[in-house]
Image (cartoon, rainbow, N blue to C red; front, side, top):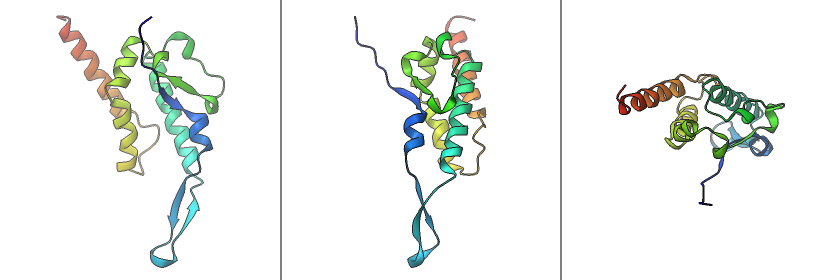
Length: 130
């Protein structure tokens, strides 16, 4: 059997065990404190990402249900061929990076993903002569 690339696209158990720190204060008096909101923002963002994948039929059927979102681990090979192309296009990475550029962005804002998927599907239809 030929080698197939596989890696985690979403790994909430790993993400939720990480300790995340932010600077509290300015200048010499600042100190690192644990960011208590990071985990909830990350959970909400990854849940929105998973729901985007499911609603757009980018995951195989066996991956469309998840009993506990906190245990969610999604691998590249859990995606349909179209879903794999979408992930490999870098669209999800750009969407995730958009939260660094816009810290106040709502974790459930998937408009960037929706636009990228629409572009990919339209390009695929044009390539097939339709």
